[in-house]
Image 1: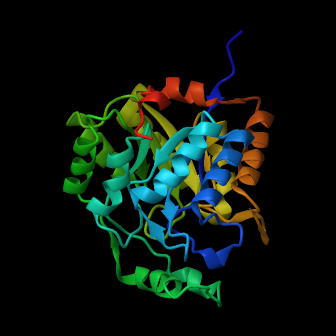
Image 2: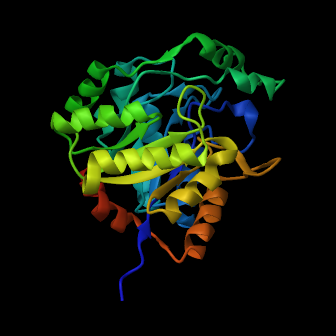
Image 3: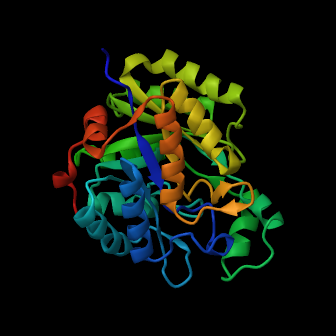
Length: 310
């Protein structure tokens, strides 16, 4: 009898989309972020995707010193795979965004496959009061900014990390980003098996309709065949429905407070672990199994936690 397929759950703990005023449950300090990652791992996440924030006001930060306060605590408490961002925030240049990955050499890092409009300004219609002075202009100015990821930027990140064994969560916000990934695969800068994370429902990228999901999957299958593993994240209310579709049709899933603050309509998620447990329940109801960190390492051919720089 064939073994059940394993589904990798990634949990994105805290990111650069939401600001601290949007939820009291959003992790901000290094200890909060580490504890949230450990909780997500205990709930079933095989990979945790991490950003850092300035503890005094929650502003996104790529300071390696902050990550050094987070990562050892997670590593000492869990075997979970740690995935660091190279996306940082839309306000950062590529050198700033890459500094922590170069300093800490994680098993996995995120990598965006194209420059794009990245509209967060509509969140101003949902929130009236902000705790910190940076939050409102950060959101408002996103209507006139570009999240820069040029071909040169992408090549620079791939080449800079080529010698440290870090592999990538390749984030694709639209169909063209899949073709960009294929371009770098053809150039030999992306190595199989690679991990495609298709992103749905962020303003400036592909939508969150089921046809958008299926188009992404069909295109990736045609371009990459057996050379890749597919995962999805849905922004906001689309998080669990899109993850469910992915699990049902052969993919992997990403949840977490970076992508959605919600547990149910009108109900904030009180932790990242809540979202992991919810999607785990669905995966297991589909008669599938969640991948352990060791199984995710084998599936993605990662270098192992003994080869990182922290």
